[in-house]
Length: 321
Image (cartoon, rainbow, N blue to C red; front, top):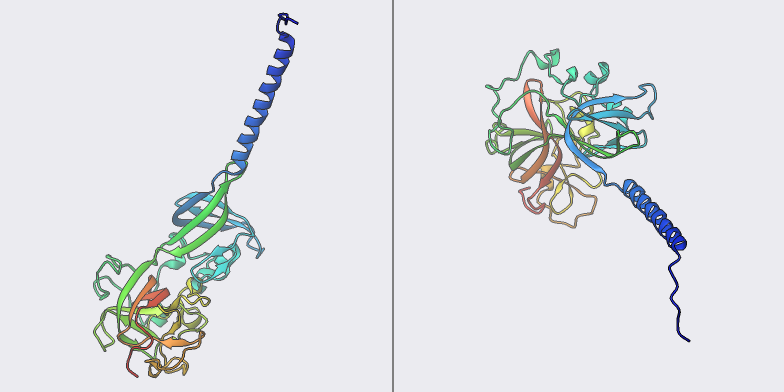
């Protein structure tokens, strides 16, 4: 039977087109919303220029920080990570050095008054000067020495909220780290420090290096250039990491600074000739090659390099007993 021509049903076509437009609009809206929900987080990296806690009376309070002047909200549950420690916003103030706690400052931003070294009875009137400083001038050290502590570097992962404000999901703080690398030329077992790139066998020249070990896990420290926190630490927040150890031999074993006050870390234990337990702590000795990260602090008229990380390239099987 022959087919007859039938004119198109314009009404149904219009309805179908309208439905398609509506579906397209809905799909576009869904894609837009999905894009908003999966927007890539922002990564900020710069100098910490401000710290504020929302409620100083609440140890669980959140707060705000600024990175190069850009404000970021830090919710209470977000931990703030240091090289070897993790604290809350309140902990930034509670664990600050004593001079900073006394002034209600964190000691982490350039404007904090407590950061500037001052004369005291402990200093015996000695003041550090650039001309008197004998720290080597090389790429491994800062080119122009200063008695101002290094600035704090902040690395933050954040998202924008509905009001366009930056809200942190991860905060990491460290000093603007300097690297010191070279041979250990002297070990002071009485005061618990090392010299790097100095006069071999003499307590002179190079950089005086201490590890920031407030709990005395891998050193026992007194004397020259000591800070006011535990075990001479100038700022316990920038401490070494214990697990896994950030002061260690390249082979992985924890390293320690020899001290006559600590029988567990004597130079006589090197070279190691026996089986090593995974928890062994092995002394650093004269002649070892090390690479350390941290920053200089001026204390007691002396400029000391405080390390939160130190790797010994030498083998624990080397060294003379």
